[in-house]
Image 1 (cartoon, rainbow, N blue to C red):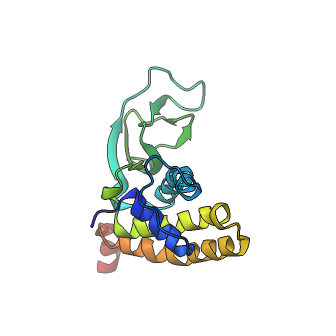
Image 2 (image 1 turned 45 degrees about the horizontal axis):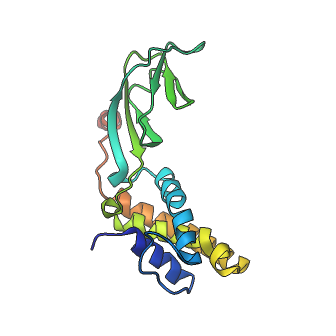
Length: 187
């Protein structure tokens, strides 16, 4: 079953012991408005903390016509859907920094792998959706229930399940063998 924003919010509400909602669209109740307020922030925070497979893109950035004032030769504006840099090709050869929505570097080309802002909840992995629900519960606990101890419990639960969900996502790829280690082992 595809995840919907409402179903993700409902899991969060269930964790808080609250009644479920029918929709998050056109919020009218306090609970709906709270879900609406926190959802995007929670989603982007969970996207940023781990290189989720479903939220990864590779891109060659276009060089800016404006060059950095000093320190680097080139600037490359980041894409509008950028959340977090995962890797930059040749980063072992060229230093870089992220400044004001651009990557500045001495590299004449800039190829990146990055986490992007996935807005289609149907694209989320189940592990991501569950972790997002846990984060939402922690973020919304005080606003919805007024109970600080419940909020603390929700953050503790979030921290406990975070690593488990990362582990599930990390199993969806294979690492490239390190040929240098293989050559050393042959000797």
